[in-house]
Length: 320
Ligand code: NDP
Image (cartoon, rainbow, N blue to C red):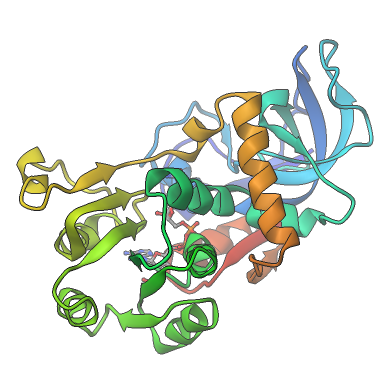
């Protein structure tokens, strides 16, 4: 089958589009023919070496498609089921996924929708429900608000009754963040974020700061978190946050969290709960999906260049 894989971590030129062996179905896994796969920032970390992976490695963590084979212990799924999954190796025509990482799709959810909400919506929703349970009237700062996770965060926060302060790097992205629920937008490539946040919050800062940018925004994020507030650092788009001295949290009794989505989905029950809630948000139209572009599998390299080049908004998908 065709796939995009690496034999060595590094730049986009290490991404190879070519023929790989068909994945093997184990007793507790299912084989899925992918119709749409999601492109996520984590794919760039796997490719570049920010996160270690076993080599050779087929890139991609999420896909949606139909089951074409089931392992002998599998009882919950059958051939023909339409599913979304977080199996490893989804930049590929077929993926073998452990059943713990597979969720059935209702008839009214398309493959495009499932792959577009997947990792990004679950990351956003777990953050605002568990990481910091957002309450009506809270003021929340969201960095990279026109990105995949960012736009979904804006929509969810609006739904929960929060005041949303968004940061973005261009005027076009600012407009999009506004359209998706941001009350205030700060262009962090030319404005002083801390100053603006202090003006908006009358010097109090935000109840929570949701930071997927990482290294470049760490100091700003801490400065924008109010006394007793929560700072969630959930990604490394600009690089990994350097080690911090824990005492920096004491100035305002800040709660710091560094979540990883897959630790919210460790059991079948957890997975069903979070997926169920996110599907409900989609059904209620709280979530409005914004797909930046559908890429061909052979153009996956370009998708990484676009994503890391800050040229994209919303979700990037591979269509087979
Ligand atoms: P995005 O669509 O948000 O793309 C990243 C955005 O980050 C860019 O569009 C850009 O927006 C901003 N950015 C700021 N500085 C840089 C930089 N130096 N280089 C590149 N981008 C920069 O990606 P995703 O929605 O896929 O992911 C967002 C974040 O969420 C990532 O850090 C990702 O790792 C994290 N994540 C974490 C998960 C977890 O389990 N912890 C799960 C899923 C995602 P702008 O131009 O407006 O600055």
